[in-house]
Image 1 (tube, chains in turn brown, orange):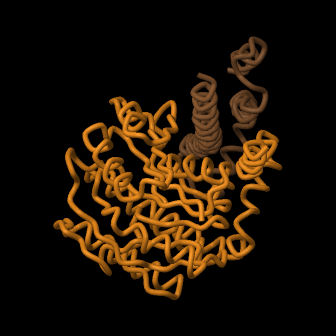
Image 2 (cartoon, one colour):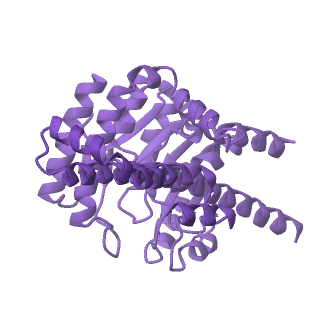
Length: 103
Length: 268
């Protein structure tokens, strides 16, 4: 996964900014097997009978966070898109008016 | 006062010529602007042929964004009052002078046409009537003045408020109840005026059960957000714009600044 992210960034198909959370997810996935005793201990302390359920919960929360980031980005892009379309309509009207005056 | 009548229209080819014809016959010296919200039909061409100025949005942005584009044009062109009305022929243009009068003579920022104070010559579906009543009560409670028709799109707006709206303070989809609350918090004056609303000339309304559900969710949530931003609203609603500009560095100037600069260019 980490390699895929690095490759996408290298080919400029993924922005460094948006790669951040994916990189974090990749690092966690890479390190998780090394930390099995810690995860086991943590999940038992938190009351999980089955440690993988705790890992799945963390993964789910991480994905939710990434999705939320997308929604924020999407909202911003929609707003910029609207502003661009509005400016385009205003300039288009002005141009047509000028052409009409010219002719 | 220089007045502009703004008609946002989306796929209104069936009605737009008749609406423009009626408005122009009543107010021949008043400028008329149709904002074509990315219609797939011939709305823009018909509006132009009927003698209106036309702003063509490249694709459908939604009612609020279309209205805001018209307001941006009005601010840039130096209009002092603008009247908003729909392109489906439901709003009786005979009510326009009463709306403008509130802005011109009484210095009201927003004159809001109310079908419940005036005449609604058509049957409003029960669900819609209930929704309007509920939102009316909520808005009345938060603005501390009686508002009977918060969903009304028949309005006259003064220049100060036009500048406020052009400056990014206008929702892209439904600019209704939450907007009235924000305006009240920001210190703008709102007054309801009796107007006459008629049945649509032709065609179907854009409201569907799903859009109605979305509308209810959107209004309630937007009103809640407006209440949490009371102080920001009181400061003229500028914090949001400024914060966003600072965050993203993507918009060098607010829409209003742009409009103002274009207005001065036009004046030159």
